[in-house]
Length: 412
Image 1 (cartoon, rainbow, N blue to C red):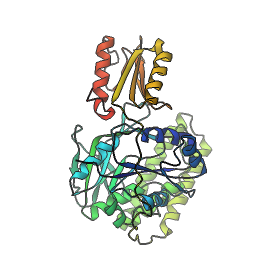
Image 2: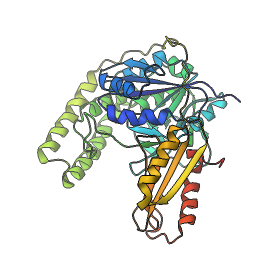
Image 3: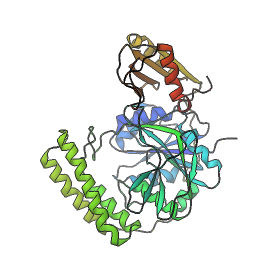
Image 4: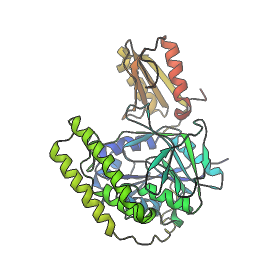
């Protein structure tokens, strides 16, 4: 069966270097019908030019610090039947889009969400959750080998994470897209609640995986310490006005403040914040909470059809998955081979093992190949044994099995 046409939307602001890697990943997907839409400021537009993609993707100039409005601008030119979203500090696995969109073969499915991998490239940052009227997420157990369509109980929604989610464009547009009252934070959660209220089904697709690096921004430093909490507070107030009974507001705010205080103290203890930063951030949170109480909550009219036709992207990944492996001391030669094969259109996974117990890390390089490095006897899965006694061949086989499906190596 032919793939449904998909529009992949990336919103980027002030993170051109990070966007370069996201776009490199998007240009190497195993999918036969997708277009790329980048909603971005001048820095992001320069990143698109550096990759020589200006004539191959849709670029929407947008500099306002409002992620909901930016996403709606992307939807405005998105012509695919499915609209997928990924952040500009994330990189997709090659089969990401295939697994994320497969559940839409069921006409009842209106939305999907995938799993998110953290900074080390191995441990999961986000799996499956539901969310309630207070915006509190609760983990869900799902079969991690296949997609599962879920219907939440009244008052809850199936949570999709903004950096790895997709929707039927017709449903998303009919709901009015994203609410611009959420300039940052809870924008996707609000949409999840509106989907649930309209009795739409959401599927969780565990094999649809992206790597999320938490790049620094105006709101967060490279160490993930917050720089400002104003919009987080404002969005919480907006969310409560939209979804939470008024008699519960005080308790929700009290719990939220306590959680944020605990996080700030952790950053303070670790040396990522100073005492004056904590005081300033607490004040900004309160200012945001107050501002959100009076922010305009306008109706969300249906979004119009795309203003532009579908513009399919020709994926750079023209060949099946290729595996290269060797000792860490051979890294220069192996990296050169990996880059050369990648330039030829192969989707390359490079494994570099050192004679140590170093933990493993995975990253996609600027050249577009995947590299996993670490000790031959070290952990990859952080829940495994500290010492992994094995041979080179057995270790390679085990690591290949771990990534085979999302990396697209199953046909080797």
